[in-house]
Length: 318
Image (cartoon, rainbow, N blue to C red; front, side, top):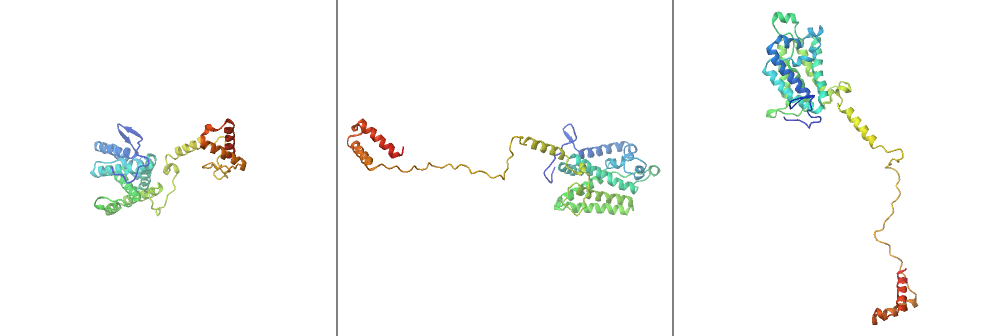
């Protein structure tokens, strides 16, 4: 799969199923795929109780705020949306980690769900039973749209086929969707749809996934948007400092302390002062050297040899 940026955390899953790492994104897409099969078997049992219905949420069925994105019926658009979410979601999850990705998905589901509850998205179950229509709103395509908004804000220069900017295709697609909702005069659904786009942009800014500082940054707790490995990193750094901490008897190194000049080691020994012989000693040494030149060293007597050695040592300064 093509990646827009180097991974920071990788795609480590919460658990493994065989050889597959079940990441946050993989889990959501997998549950949505299972819901398609279950909805086909029994829609009333596996679809209606989990879709977003403002009337039912107000009556206490709060789980719908979380489950509505994964309640899906069989549709080619649902399958395509799940495939796109799998790629885009895992790309983002590799950059921010599985824990923050779970929080991001929760925000993208719960906040628009609350907006839909306030504006009473859906129909009362009793009315839906009479009209034999779906009682609530659901579909993973809304979650996919939110993640595409996050992706475009992360990589505004990203391009698709025919070198068309990704944000252009997304803008056209969302504009068509909004016009279709306006055609149906479904104003609660329009408010809900626009809230999914706005929440996605605000979430991208809150999680530092975009450089568009024009988007206001909503302050969220550090446990949600912070680095999930920050605590472990701080503990590791503290242990490293403790390991390198000097003992009580050791004087800490001061890089700014004045240093004593080092001893200068000469490259070659300094020449000794030249020794001189007296005039009489020099004349005696010349006589001995002339005698050696004429008859060799053996021509010197023992006394003359001792005298020559003494004069030589004196000349060397010894």
